[in-house]
Length: 206
Image (cartoon, rainbow, N blue to C red):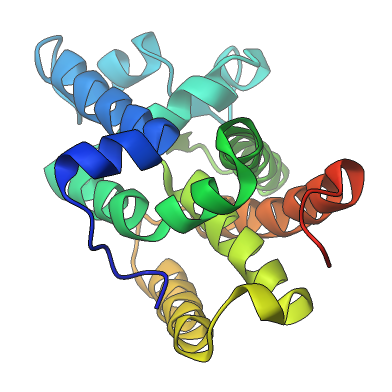
C-alpha cells in the first residue's frame, strides 16, 4: 500500500523534499495571513495572492500560483496538508522532485484558471484559495497510473485511490463554498500533465 506512511520525520524530509517544502510554505503563509488581518479577511487574502473572478484580480497571472498556498481557515489548511502529507509522497518518489513539482504546480494553476473562467462565464463573483486543485492534480496523476500503468501500483492502493476520488467528488458538490471546478480542473490537469511527462521524458515505462 503506497499511501501508508512508515517514515520517521528525518526520513520523510530526506525522501520527500518538495512535499516537505510545500507543507512548510502552506503553514508559513497561513501564519502570515493570521498576523496580517486574518485568513478569512478578503482584503488580506487578495493582498497576499488570492485569485478572484473579477478585475483586477482575474488578470494577475501570478495569483493563479500564489493562491495555491493560501487557506481560509485552520480546518481548510489541516485537510489539505493532511492530503499532501499522506498521498503526495509516492508521486514524488516515482517522478523525481522537479517532475513532481511541475505536476503539482501546473495542476493547481490549471484548476484556478478553469474555475475563474467558469465563474466569469456564469457571472458569479468568487474568491479562490487553497491547495485542493494541486492535490487533485496528484490524484489525477495516480489515476493515470491506475488506468494505464497498472504495474506501478498495487491493487490495494488502486482501490484506495478510487475511494478517495469518489468521496472527493461527492464532497466537492455537496459542500457549499467548495470550488468544485478547481478540483475538476486540477484532476484533469494532473492526469494529462503526468501523461505528457511520461512520454516526453521516457523515465517511466508505460
